Figure 1 (cartoon, rainbow, N blue to C red):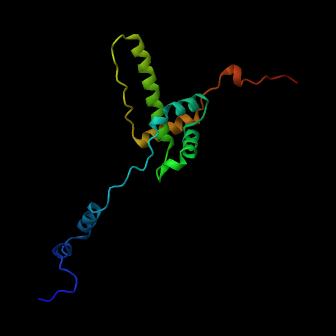
Figure 2 (cartoon, one colour; figure 1 turned 90 degrees about the vertical axis):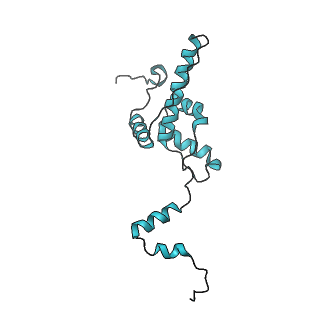
Figure 3 (cartoon, rainbow, N blue to C red; figure 1 turned 180 degrees about the vertical axis):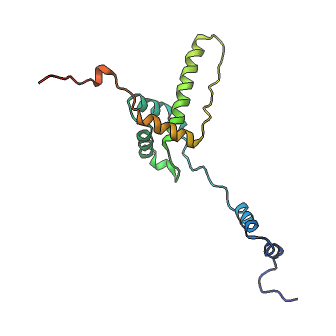
Length: 146
């Protein structure tokens, strides 16, 4: 039996008998694993909290972080949902640290905020639409009647 100059590949012959969905499944299984497309912003939780306390929206903070960390992103992104999630985790951690200060010797582990990207994005959008109120004495304009 004469085969073409290429080596005989028995897998190639068995693929010919597969249906299109089966072929696509085989092809998909051969694809490399996709790297994490999100940049880990959790180490920047204090900066995120500081900006949020100053009235910045989650979207504005995400944009600011993208600018500041541009050289480290390497094709990954930072979304406002990520910023929202890290901020909520930071608040929970701060709360638990305060509780720990009152409970001698007891260590209360920080609760991980388990929330999907979609849900975090939705909640960030909702909170961004309602800006953080400014300190009334600092942000109040005087009104004079004319």
